[in-house]
Image (tube, rainbow, N blue to C red):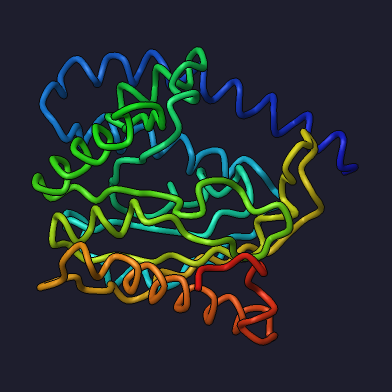
Length: 254
């Protein structure tokens, strides 16, 4: 099957799945009225899992998930290579709330579903960032993990970009572990600025051991951020069989 035909199939299948999921999620949300909306959220993540299964070109290999308690307060962080990272991470067998830029919540249907699932819009203007972190902290207090891409946006070339402080500040503030996830192979699946899906691809997702924050203070945010950045870079270098320096953007954190 050509790339164009495969891409048309994938987009048609995805749109169909979204339209089928919306009314079912709406009904489920009526009976799931209290935070953290575990059932509604989990049903929304199953849409991502369905999208992955609908694409015959993605061969997904997941490791490390068995070490994670399903309802434990983690701040989950991952490198971000492509839009397909979102449905890929949704294949993990636990519910977590995603912090995402506020513009996504304005998209018809998808944005509505994100709100019904209890995901958290991040508006970088004014006090929007502080309000998002406060809401995330409340979820953590309810034993619901929170997911953040600390690079802030997709990598343009697949290399690991610098991390922002927000996820690590939140983890320290809530005194919960950081759970790093490493994704490799998703960058060519749907490159930034393109609507076409790439050639058949093996995609690897590895859940690393949690990084504790017990006893840390806000002064430790930078050290925690850089520690997690190094761990993800080291795992990426092993997956690619290159040095850690080769998988990291030159603009990495000091």
